[in-house]
Length: 342
Image (cartoon, rainbow, N blue to C red; front, side, top):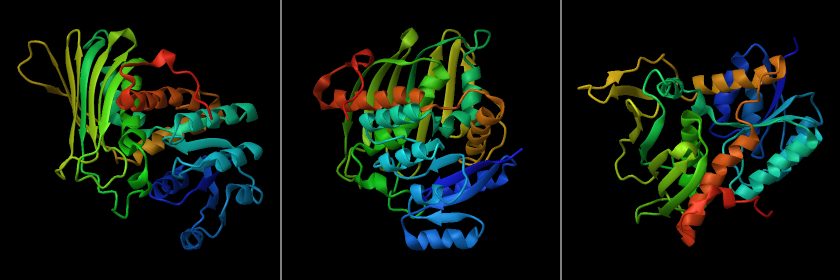
């Protein structure tokens, strides 16, 4: 069977993980790379002499036979990349978020639909072992359905570090677009529910290195009446990360105390948490492997496309609702948010 052939667009922080997992997958092959930085492109091509390279997706797609454009570029300004992929009949797998505005994301999804090309978004946190185990706790014969929760994420993210993408430093609402989008997607995925209404406040502490707001506080109502209190920051003034996701269910509580693990549960009268055993995994890599496996399965076996762009738009509307609420709109009803004007 011919491997699925990828063109990797962007050689920034996430690209090495994708290069690794594609190289390891027997049904995948990297055939092209795109990078506007000439030195970075030359360095990558020196490591991969059999791969074509160039400054644009249109250029590389015109020189190699490929199946997929993997976008590891900043979310702003992807119009040319999406258009080039559509013209070349390439499926699209894009790093989250799909865009840095809801209107642009909706335009990308619409363009892919018109061209008849699949568009998936790399929401790899769905593939963490802890995420899968947490979702299983809400079965009727375990804790039962969730009714309310609290999600806190407190981090000092030094955006100047060389292994991190630098573009969030100048983004509008960097916490929402780059980090909270993961958390909102996880809530939807784990609770199997969609947002109904959101009230929120965003702000920036005096010591923040980010131009846009690095702090988010929100109250979110989901279908089924699930209520979640959310607090997230990239400007927590302690280098030790704080993470806690507590969910109250009909029979007890689920508690995740680390981003990649530390999951436990307790029934109402239990004196202590019961630890949920998790398979050992390499964060950022094994979850990318899981996503890639499902993505390949869509083309090989006809399984559903993982994390489709249409689904991603629902999570992005949560981001936009937070922005509108913080700007003075009060509580935002998601049903009132029609397509954004481009």
